[in-house]
Length: 362
Image (cartoon, rainbow, N blue to C red; front, side):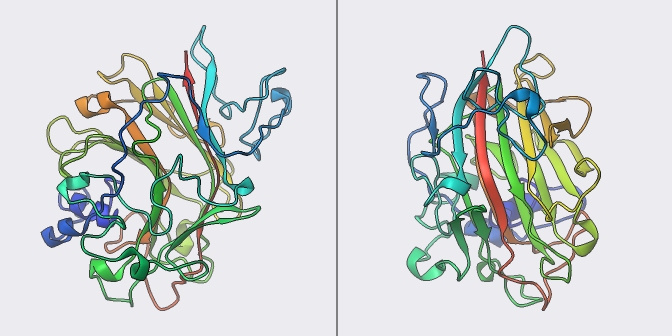
């Protein structure tokens, strides 16, 4: 998320200090959100599992396919990360498993945000409100499905995340309404964690996705300044018809000022359209010595996005991180092969997330 405006809401504060020449107005900083006031509980201390009530189904790992993120060890009912083995002499232990496609509503025991999303308390130094914008009323600001913006469970498809956008050329942030859900204060990841999303990107075959900024990402718990923060964007992009098969993996690690460790463009194996089917996006926070806080490695359909882990050193990682099931907003500045919002851009073109799962190794 560090990578853009909106987060634009979030992200706009970051733009002023981002590489690639994307500058954000200082006035936008005050628009950023903060909602969760729940205390932070690091999972793994008590072995509790947060997730949906969906049952786990046994699947022999030898028959696991790229179309399923639910591979299981023989004799085990727990899913395993797609294509990634635990470190030697360690095992995967399931921490959270929310199969949105089997839910009836957003699980409030695991997720903050609901309709309209919102940022954690203290994010970028802004005051917390219940709906993510300072001074706005959630009941009048956010729509109800099928009127966006919304976070809605759709049976069989999963979590649908749909923002709204302003008219082309209108770059005022308050006219561009984001949506997301995140697990700040309810699920905290640490070195040794593997996070996995099963998601399908919005479409853009005829301009209907132009300018949508989507992301699945994690950030450190301590983020009181947007110009000194750490995060990992596992799948981030601004959509255009030309980049339907592309996404970005970005790691920001900022012990002193802005420092982007890696920003790379990737595709799924075979370079298929990421909006044509669900793909599995993974993040392994390795408990190693590559960096003072370990390293991060991203995956797409069980394959590493880059062939090496990315070291992280910012002390803020030491308190752990939280993750977003999904995030969507109009992009106010275009980057990475995207295009601007135009008259064809649709507000009925969601990001779908079918499943979110977290493991810990020990």
